[in-house]
Length: 74
Image (tube, rainbow, N blue to C red):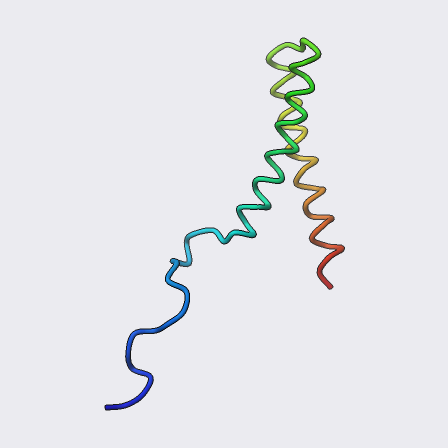
């Protein structure tokens, strides 16, 4: 019998499953995007404008997330 040849211990999650941090980042970006769409909806905008506000909010949320990650990791 040799040591270290048994089943590995540790994380049982597969590497294809997103981590909690990645899920939180995606939720943050979607929240910013949907808030832009909600503001457009409340101002009686057309569906095209609401869609544009959601897409614009997702872009802004992604940029904001990139900036927050950039300033917090050195």
